[in-house]
Length: 308
Figure 1 (cartoon, rainbow, N blue to C red):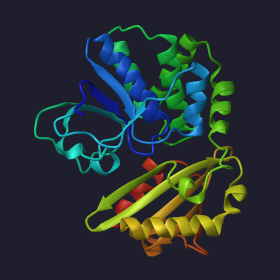
Figure 2: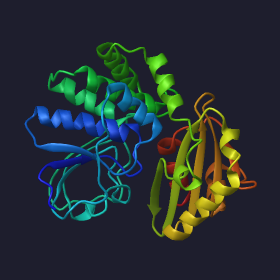
Figure 3: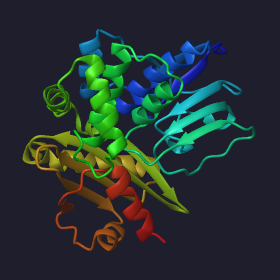
């Protein structure tokens, strides 16, 4: 069945920024008179569900593919490998993103806005301010939640002054204490107890391609790395199965300690590329990355550089 509205969505395996920015972009475009609908490309994680529960909101409708010619708006991503099935034949109207640009091509002109900030929601905040458009409490909470998530409460190296300033201004509108709310939100996302290994490695996972080399980087947040490693063998089996099914050359699972801002990584596949990139050995499929919390800035580009 053909969609009537312009669909707005973030990447597959959506994180808090993807979901919240989709909802905020929906509000922005509706204010301008467009017929739009925020949707999602995967299940909502526990951190994002905390935000939705706080606002008493339902998750956007779940879709897996888009029809040929379907008008869409992409937020928090641009790479087709991370987008909806059929995206190559959709009509991309707009992209709002803060990632590298890769594997992206359109047949028609579009509105494209990408900025080197820590969160897509920061760009959306600027769009509201540029048009003197009122930011209501719901959108303020959505945007500040996305910023807190993507910057790990300003601890990530991806965080900029613009992110922090936007978050502080949004917190004033929402009447929220950033530290209290932010820590509770991040903690909600660290409960991994009821996920299977297969679900765990797909909670927040992205594919990257460089020539013939395909690698996957997944990330989970925790307050205790050792708790996650108790299921290391089962997690490794799930990663191996994923690589076989998807033809991946390398799979990295980042287990990120949100309290101490470090990551333990489980590395399978062509570990020599990982060792070259980070100048450290992979032992028993493990490598500890001190101070590493950002896949976007501290892992994916390092691997891509090692492949050149």
